[in-house]
Amino acid sequence: MKEITLRNSGPVTACLSSGKGGVGKTSLSVNLAFALAQKGVRVLVVDGDLGLANVDVLLKLQVQSTIRDILDRGADPLEAVVYVEPRLGILPASSGVPDLADLGPDDHQELGSILQSLGDNFDFVLVDTAAGIGSSVLWFNTFVDHNILVLTPDPTAMTDAYALIKVLSRDYHRKSFHLLLNQVKNEAEAKQVYDHLARVASHFLSLDLEYLGGVPHDPAVSKGVRDQVPFIKISPRSKAALAISGYAERLLTWAAQKPANRKTAV
Ligand SMILES: Nc1ncnc2c1ncn2[C@@H]1O[C@H](COP(=O)(O)OP(=O)(O)OP(=O)(O)O)[C@@H](O)[C@H]1O
Ligand SMILES: [Mg+2]
Image (cartoon, rainbow, N blue to C red; front, side):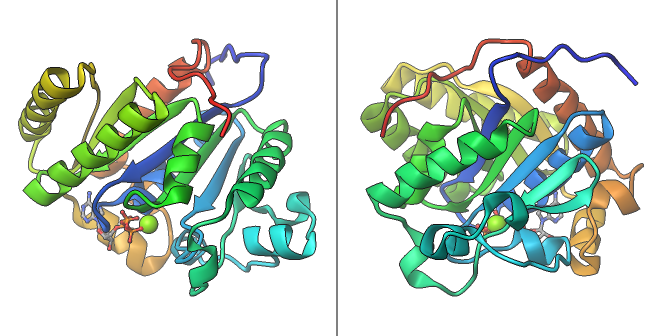
């Protein structure tokens, strides 16, 4: 196992978001987290889809308490974390609770303190957010150091990703975005989609978007979802698993860097 130099100022925090729904955020978050844990770091996945949680379903988890229980009735955050591997913890959210889909400012502040103290036990905190530009999606994106935008080559996924980037840069002063292209035919297609969006963002928003990479459309991903087991675990040699493992290596390098985006008080 490689020796990893970690920052001594808390975990690397990142969230995976998208404008459009169903592009693969949850599948990629869970598998990236698995890949990171396999590489020897401690990872917390936060289910940031607060009204329609999915991470627990993807991993067939027995959930004791959720973010809602922590905020509403003071459940212990440490006890809410479900460990699926010795180095991989999940903080679950609840499903079918419209009131919780977007939290108010006080709850955001409390959630921020909870995540900060839970984060002391981990090297990485990955948040899988809901799709769109709801207030909690925007809050998670300003809470973390690194913003990963997930999109597919579908034109609506591209325009919705651009809309999210625009709101975050214009209204929340976020300046650094990593693009993760999912369900691509090949690396060339991923690069083409990235180049297009990067040109538009540079021209209209004066932003330099960063290219994280492409994940191929791969039946191993849907099989993992159906079997409720990470594809990186059951199909480690699949194209999607090899891609994700490479991006986990890239995320490890963030641990030695300064945060891409400064935390902003919200
Ligand atoms: N690379 C891929 N290859 C094949 N299928 C994929 C790939 N990525 C995602 N999928 C499929 O797309 C579906 C949606 O994925 P997922 O639930 O991860 O998306 P999401 O962005 O989290 O959705 P939501 O916005 O509803 O939270 C899943 O059924 C999954 O099997
Ligand atoms: Mg999801």
